[in-house]
Length: 266
Image 1 (tube, rainbow, N blue to C red):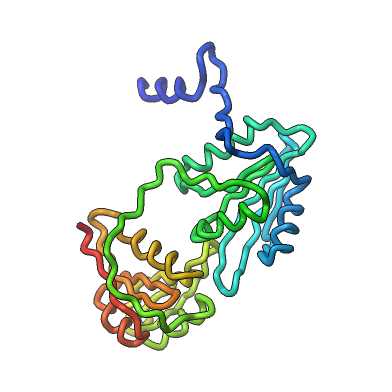
Image 2: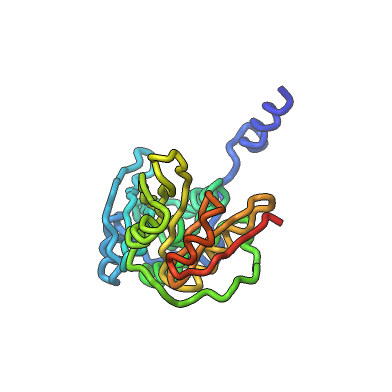
């Protein structure tokens, strides 16, 4: 009961009032403003970042328009969540509160924001956030409280082979150890099962195709930041494969001409 009372007290201010909105940081510009979320999609398209809308909705409370859209930049895919408030009626502190909640939430989102709008750059798309901010006239706000990626040293990783998209990488893995039941995630990676259904030795793998070697190395290090969680990965060029069946590491590295990258969890 004490815990419940404490939790309730943290959600309201003194005198039973809701806590005040969290303002946007002072350096967030007040312009430009956009009329709707579709205007942001149009602006991105004009800058060679076409974004295909997957769903849209409008708020009944603050006259905002929101949508999700998927960017495919030469085979590298990620999702944007776009929110635009009515330019005639929006409250800057209300936007600040929504942005703050997303930056601190479980997913620790990267946000591009200005004026009456904000864009959540999901998954590996965070590497595009500065480019999106430049196109739209906003600034990038990094996640709050996100566990830092350790600067673990990496082995020498070859620049080749490279793959045009994650499905091409999945085909290569399939030829080596299997890659069935493929599920391409909206945030970029592809998950599949290695092994053979006939012998019931299926196991999972997660595949990443990224835009550059800097992002590739960040993906590798990001998978090595959890104490007590060993990792076996194979990487080269613009891709990373994480393997749940650690015994496949050397075999996959040889078959795909990649480098074996391991982390013992310590």
